Length: 151
Image (cartoon, rainbow, N blue to C red; front, side, top):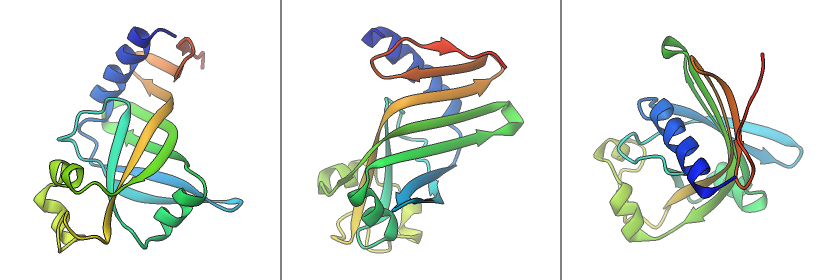
């Protein structure tokens, strides 16, 4: 798939997930899958990368360090939009990036703010997008052609 096609599909997915406050982040824990709700920062435009704050010593961070394959699931049934994003996660400790993505609402979970060494970012780079909506079902994989899926 051309970069233009990937970019177009990413923009479409961004419009679907922008106003969804919570997504499910699924990681691997050995042979098991572990899911948990994560706050989707709607202030950050989805560009193929998703960003989340986490505690450095959390199970999800250890799971990502062991296996970076993750899935993000976004649901907005009232709008008829469902999105699954598969990708590779990485742990980011850059203080400037943490400050740039910080929202004061996050202080509820991270009282010492973005400068806290115990707070990290999870960056998920999308590799596969799967969306269902009023315009049908689409699967897009980085480096491959987009395809519509029949029922």
